[in-house]
Structure formats: structure tokens, C-alpha cells
Length: 450
Image (cartoon, rainbow, N blue to C red; front, side, top):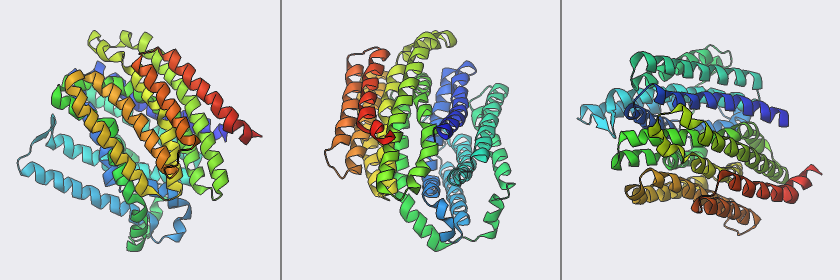
């Protein structure tokens, strides 16, 4: 298992690292205003798919192992996703014709129109990749994941350099995603889709499971991206650009979790024995927090000693916030563990409810504090929102019982909040989390190993 986790971790880290490298390189090619527009485009790129994919990317992880039980499984999913994106494009066109030419610093056409096209091509790629994950076709998944990301990074940087505009980001990403679509379409297994037909019963079954993920995804995306639009509203695109850089680096913490999540999530869903499932969840929590601590230490060191040498002095204002943004993600494994548990139990509506509440709290805090404290407000509301979200997920997954799980997430939340409030150095944060890992090891992992 550990070998596969490291393999997935390396591939996912490499792929997402290239994506982050793009965002780190673009400030060197564009003005802060143009980079701010890219920050908004990336936010839309993350938010819209959670609606247009209908949550079917999650349904694949949960049901693809038993696809033979559902008539026209693949055709139903891919056709539904296509129809929804067409509807979005028609809606954007209608909005443009009605006279609404811009939105939060972006043009409806071509910016928003092209980003919908990009989202469709990238969405179909994600559906194919998830099928490879569930079928445990590791080698093909690794190759496809890496090739797609290399194409994306290379073409985006090339197009931005040639056009000297933020539009190069959309153009390069669309070309890369389209080439990847052609790659999957030429694949033998994907051709099986053409032999299937859209099935209403299958659609209803899958959508009954997945529709709460739409609300969950929208809420989660708002939690991580709404602050950029609020900053643009109260400050300027330049400030959005500055914050986008800091958040892009701090949120690289996700790299620590993707390998474990990509490998273990399908395993958790496949496990029919509840006790064995819980063992997998505790293993996941321990490994995720451990790797997260290492990532936090590395990101903090880099932001303090390396970043100032790469970027103009104007970015120094936000580089100091990077360790605090990274710190917010140390509690993220609790959220993921509870999330996987509720998906296993098919309690997707509960996931949606908590996500919506968490995003409302985050948006409310940002609207209240950003006018007073600017970019700093976006930083501390990120930490507060993630702590609140993790605690609520743990409570809901345990049917609101105040048990050990709750006191564990509460303890980590208090450690992080105290370190932020007293502005303690990154190594104090790391020490606190390492002590918690020792507790986890002797309370759960040592027993599991025996």
C-alpha cells in the first residue's frame, strides 16, 4: 500500500506542482492587474465544474466498480455533462446579448464564454481519469495525468508569452484540454461509450446520489475562492493578483494529501466491512497529517528565505502571509476523513448542508473584515473557516456525538488558532502538530499495526 501511495503522491504532486508552477511563473510575465484577472479566471475554473459535472465525477468513484449493474453507465454520464455545458454556453450568450458585457473585472465574451469551453474539456478528462482510478489501471492513469499537465503548463506559458495577455492562459489551457480529449477518445475503452445509450433510470440513480455534491462543491469552491471576488469589489485587481500569488503558494499544502487521497479514497468506498473501513480512515488521517506537517515546514521555509528573491518588492506585502495560509490546511485531513466516511454511508445531503453553512460563514466573515483589514482579513478568515468546517464535518459524521474524534479536531483547531493569534513561528506550529501525531500513533496506529 505504501508504495502505491508514494507513487500516486509523486504523480499527483508532479501534476499539481506543474499547475502551481504556472501560477508562480505568470507574475513574471504579466502585470499585477492581468495576473489578478487570471486569479479570477482560476476561481471560476474551480467553481463552475462543481455544477456542470453534476457531481458525476464522485458518482464514478462510488459506482464505477459496479458499472455493469447500471444500463448505459458511461453514455449517461458523458451525455449529461455535455448537455449541461451547452446550456451554460447558451446562458452566457443570452446574458451577453442582453447587454451585460462584463462581470467583476472580466469580460463576458470572450473571458467567461471561453472558460466554460475549457471547463467542459477538462471535465471530460477528469471523468476518464476517475474511471482509471477505480479500475486501478495505475500505469495508464499515471501516464495520462502527467501528459495532460505537461501539455497544459507548456501551452499556457507559451500562449501568455506570445500574446502578452491574460487571455493566453485561457487559449493555452483550452488547446491542452482539447488535445487530451482527443487522446481519450482514441482510447479503446472510451470507444465502448459509443455502443451505449443514455438511460433515464441510470441517470436518476446516479443523480440521486450526486446532486448534493453540487451544493457541496459550490460551497467548497466559494470557501476557497470567494475572497478573491470580494477583494476585487472592495480593493482592486492588483490586490487580487497579490493575494492570488500568496494563496497559490500556501495552498500547495494540498499536494501533501492528493497522493494518499487518490489512492485510498476508492479503497475506502470498496470496503464493505465497517471496522476495516474505520481502520483505513485512521491510517489515512495519520499519514495525511504527517505529510501535511512536512509540506507546511517546507512551504514556510521557502516563503521566508526563497520567495523574496524571485518576485518584485510589491509582493513582499503578501509573501509574509504564506505560512498562515499553509497552516489553515493542516486541519484539512479531518474534513476529508469525515467526508469519505459520509460518502461511504451515502449521506451526501449532510455533506452538502455543512459545506453550504461553512461557505456562508466564510463569505460573511470576508464581507465584514476585508473592508477593515484588506488582504490580511482574507488570510485569517481562511483559517477560521477551515477550522469551523472540519469541526462541523466531524460532528455530522458522528451524528453530533461529542466523542474522541471531536476532541481531536478541536485540539488541532486550538493549536492552529493559538499559533495564528500569537503570530508564532512555523516551527512552533510544527511541534504542536507532531505532538498530536504522536498521540494518534499510540492511540490508533500502533494498535492497527499490531
